[in-house]
Length: 319
Ligand code: NAP
Image (cartoon, rainbow, N blue to C red; front, side):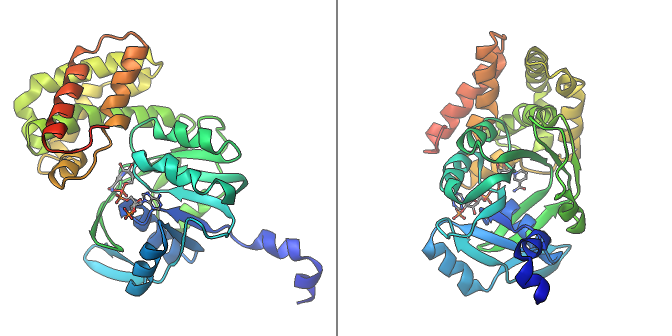
């Protein structure tokens, strides 16, 4: 008691920072439940009072893993709560990230850590520009999760998380929280290489599975198309100074196609369920960069056109 009264700043310093999780969707829920399970302080941030009331009525977030289901009573709040944020995990889709983070800029402490889970490229820079007083850390995740109902997530695919800050190679001390939570991860000084590689794999596989309305494995019937895309993407990556991400791209794409032969790609699932895709941050981003670098990419441009036409015909957003 004496210590607490005389040295309030000392007790504050000993408090672990709260993990604020923006977006209680698939990945946000997967991270929130594992961090909470490890005894770390977690707050979910949901859109508005109606979503908060719905969450509170359900009693918490449920995680299903290896057939076991457990519900965790994680505290939640809305975007306009006044609790300051020192550590924010942004778990929205790429097209929602910037707007959602902008709504929190007033709550973000100077030097706060902002972790960006978004697939593809482009949204990370938009968020970083919106919060220049924070440290943005990009995450490239191969974990797989889906919502089986509201406030409930199934951990479907064991994977890995690469984390890195393009402007500062020093690893943050909160990586210990990930270790304590059993979140498989590694810090990398070259996160862009990881993000570009994943983007290239995605561009070589996902749009074709939508256009051919097929599982990943069936792309082996369209081997020439896949090979042409890989060649253009490898050339583009090299032009952008990402030669490591370009290396053996085609061989890895074929390995992924074979290893996930029975699966439908995430873009295929989005389209099948009438959801907006992240096209602008994947294939769209690659095409824009190719145009900016005057890098020939006729197959990529054609693929984007075909995909946009396909989405339009089904009344889905094309951006
Ligand atoms: P998701 O299930 O659709 O979840 C996104 C969540 O963000 C939703 O709960 C949504 O709220 C919330 N949200 C959006 N705008 C918000 C706002 N302004 N305020 C509060 N909440 C907001 O998406 P996801 O599958 O987790 O994907 C997130 C990112 O991770 C994507 O870029 C995806 O490509 C990437 N990723 C996903 C996986 C995976 O297995 N799921 C794997 C690797 C990478 P509502 O529920 O109210 O709409």
